[in-house]
Length: 199
Image (tube, rainbow, N blue to C red; front, side, top):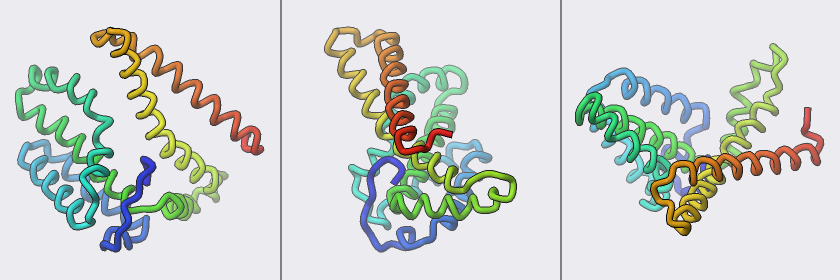
């Protein structure tokens, strides 16, 4: 669960080992990225939606995976339409939603412990070049756990901007969000240093 959620279940995807899940995700995303056509985006979206249904993941959890994209999509849609018409909107933005939703399904059907164990196993060959697999797993863990935190910080910042009547101000979002994110990173760093993980 990359974003702090896990959907209980016994589907094939739930039981699939982490390395195979990641390989399947990569194979699925290759044609989505290479074939820049609306029909491919539509077909891949149908595949992902069907996979969510088969894995019995609730609509709430599914929406939670793509919800952080909504503001970015709203900002980018007019530009994509202007530069390439409706096809550009479907291919570029639709492809992004499909990719995030597919990755989200992998994480929703994988416990954090299993994901990190899988990452650590995949990183074992790096030990021969001086890279610690445990460090790689820790980095992945911190990155994954930061995703929902940053999403919450963004929502809090947007609520604060709305309360001040600055709905159209980009600066009223960007500046506080950067400050809050840096403060969160500092707290995480202090916590790691306190546990001796500071080198």
